[in-house]
Amino acid sequence: EKLHTSRRNGAMGCVESDLNSTDGKIPNTVLITSADTAKGRFIAKKILEHKQMSVKGLVDDPFSKEAQILADLGCMVLKGEIKNLNALWLAMKGCVAAVCILDPMDTANMTRSELYDLILNFAKYTKELGIKNFALCNDEEAVRGPGKKDLHAELNKIGFKNVIYVRYPQFCFEDFTTRFHYKESLAGSFSLHLNLGKDGKLPLVCAEDAANLILNAVHNPSRHSSKSSKINLNVTYDTMDAHAQCISEVTGLKLSYVPTSTADMENADLAKVFARYVDSKVEFVAESKSESRNFKEWVKDNQKELKSAMMDQQAQVKIKGKIQLMEQTRQMKSRLIRQLLKAAPNSSPEEIEKAFKSIHQQRFNKAVEIMRTKNVEDSTLVSTMGELQKSSQVLKSEPLPTAEHKK
Image (cartoon, rainbow, N blue to C red; front, side, top):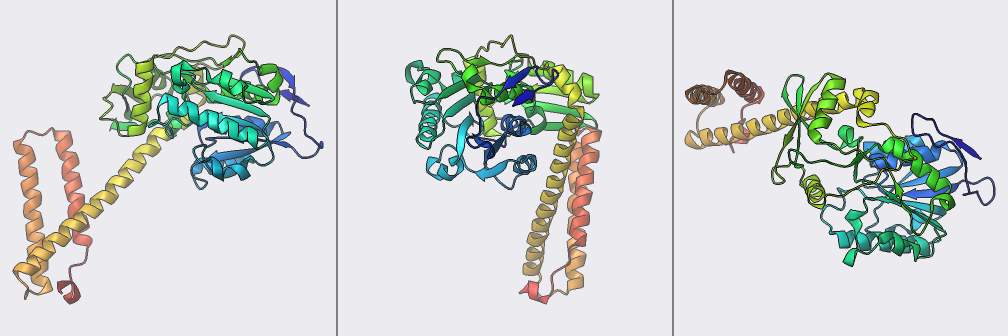
């Protein structure tokens, strides 16, 4: 069976699979861990396109958007992670190969030694359940064992028919559309806040193109399995500032990179992973025989996705802000009404309403006066006054207490 891959997606030529189905009818099955990541999704997609193999994908949440994408591709989606081996025996049933991918967000609180043991124990368990071919796609330095033991060498001792080790950075180009978070400064202007330092470089690879190389390895493990060699991907090294400038140039959206501290990062787990990269200074060697798009080419091909990621995030922030505002104003109204009822328990609803509106208007005027006194910038003042007016509208739209509420 021939597999043809396009030159644009990483020319792999025509290859023949040495993972032949046992009966010629039922496709062999590949298990992919962390299949809901960009890496896992593209590997699953490439394998399924070959038609001769099926895929089982382990995910954190089987009802997530990412899991639905996998299901639409034809992947059997299963909830599970390699930390809980006893729950994976059914997922591994019928599989002839396993592709082990680690989501850095799931292992952010683990040491290198713990990651080393996690992968090794998972590999041993897959061997016990009959899996013959094992592929590890991960950052080599992130999983160094005690005394800098070579994990690849240890995997070869387990007894698999073939062991494939792909030196895969923990992050990829696709994380710019799925994992990284953007903040809107002004209309059409965004900023990316990460704790990588001003000149910090993050090793990145195009997950879609890398999947072609991994696909060849999975379908032809004997050609890529060696006790001494590792498969290296084309890794892009550049500063986040350069990446932001590239996105701005290609998409037309103004994006800037803002270095921040680990403590100030919104996502604590992501901050920990980035901090490790800055400290470790891992070096990657490019695979001269593999072809992959550079970052600028990838941005050109994914302009729509990048723009949608930025716009959608801001829309979610605004929706969340409105919900929080409504909740805060309801709580404020409830407290004020309780105070009024306590001060004047025999007042009529009309009297309570009049007093309530008067006090709220006084608070609004006082807030504006304080902001003007502190010389707040006009743009900030207008924005804040708008939020205060929204608060006022929410409060007025809420019904005042009835006799039951007074009780």
